[in-house]
Image (cartoon, rainbow, N blue to C red; front, side):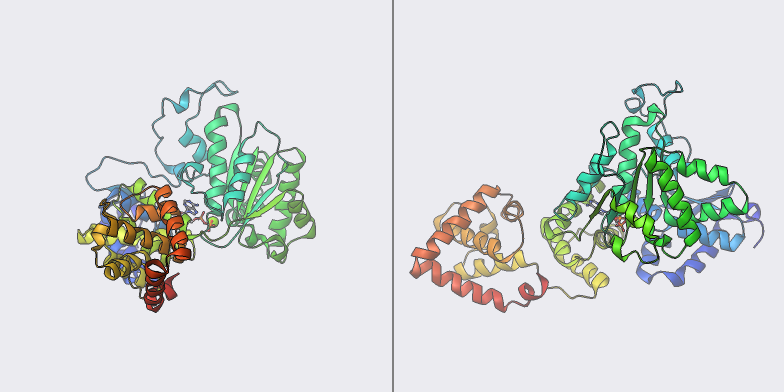
Length: 479
Ligand code: ADP
Ligand code: MG
């Protein structure tokens, strides 16, 4: 291909699209890639138009580095891909801020103390300098049993004004469980509080560290490399398992590590496996890790998955009905990245098809993502079965009426949910027109009491209902 300067944007974009197509699914391609329109190619920046803000963010998060790599391959020159929302003013790209235009300085943020060198630094500039993505923050990290200890350790190490025993800190856990999010949250927190104190933070993936190291050896710029990684107050190294087979890089990392650690600077690392499984690691390095704190993140429970989805939907300003959120959280269980992917797919279906988020659509997304055919969500099935049994409507069961038979049926349904599902009392209340968790406790305790004393009505109803429900395929397969 000719020099980038001479190619029209549409031609470059067509070339990129055909190179990308074989490596992504058809749905992904038609939902996310094909829908981008080339606007212009100037100064090696290819600007593409996205139909919505959500679309832009999703593409930036998932595809831009890939698109840039393909562009480089095609043209032999580095091309930056920037996404703009169609019809909207220029919105600076959030990731890779190093190349973004200077962000507007937030007057509140920048009113902090003056730096040691006498001038203030904007959060965005500080984050870019540290190689951090400002999207990752403690504020949008949902806490659950699966991550609360790791989160607490990360918060503690972010407070540079207090000594910490947990240095170095190593967080390990499977993919998509929030390690990078936590790691970068530390950096962003430190910068938001201390950026004007001359504090230096650096986030680096172990791959990037390796590349920088190799580059420094080649170009004999060892001093720059050392300055970059040994001369910081907080070093955040992501995915250190990649160092396993790279002896020289590992030795270099060991030196950087020691230099920092000995001078009391802080180091936080992540790994996709526990320390003792980091085969190929120098024993000296392993024992250094052990001198601090090693903690893990686990797969999220149902409640955490639900909370993450709801938080996401709120952030995107996307109306997500509780039963749809429930279905997705019940079936997408592996990790948060998958859950976000499912949510993104749901939003895409809704936006492109101009339809609301329904259970049917969620079922389709789940099938696309997991191959699983899902029935109705357990909660809905319980409500339906109880409503049928007592010959009341499902709406009445969820509604406000206090008529005796309905209130009784409602208590039975709530009781069954506490018994059968993993949902919290608050979530169960949510399925009954947003009732309070204390109402659910009352229902549960009342029916549990009647189960001991009321043979005629309660015991027989429960036995019958439980039999009917246990025959329902959903309860067995999905929970
Ligand atoms: P890992 O580094 O462990 O592979 P990431 O930190 O990249 O995982 O997380 C994958 C995605 O899930 C990211 O978009 C992240 O923001 C999101 N995520 C993970 N855990 C949480 C959480 N507890 N709350 C909110 N978002 C989360
Ligand atoms: Mg990661």
